[in-house]
Amino acid sequence: MSTLSRKQVALIHVAKNQLKLDDGSYRAILRHIGGVESSKDLDPIGFELVMQYMITLGFKSDFSKTFYGHRPGMATPAQINLIRRLWAEYTEGKGSDATLGKWLDRTFKVSAVRFLGANQAPKAITALLAMKAQTERKRKAV
Image (tube, rainbow, N blue to C red):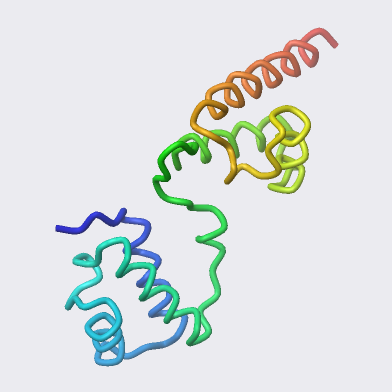
């Protein structure tokens, strides 16, 4: 049984399509690199190995920049996604991971969202919700 998310399985298929791999070549990579017959059977280590191999073949993705998986003691992927979404809403879509990182550095002494600890993530979410609410109140008052 796979422990990969649907997004991870989908990413492997995106890589296959981007690299224009025929089914035989794709299956050979899964078999020789990941040790499985289907991407759905990959474990997290097999996923990393297959993705690293796909990258050596020329696959380009920003998935690894945005998805960090479950890391004990660190913010969960759901918390990271929520923080990014709240930041985008607060900045009206003008914010980036770089500007979010600057805010996190000033506020939590953490240079990027990927370094946010499990105890800091709820505080960041609460702060962003408050900032967003305050901005909305100011807009309504004008």
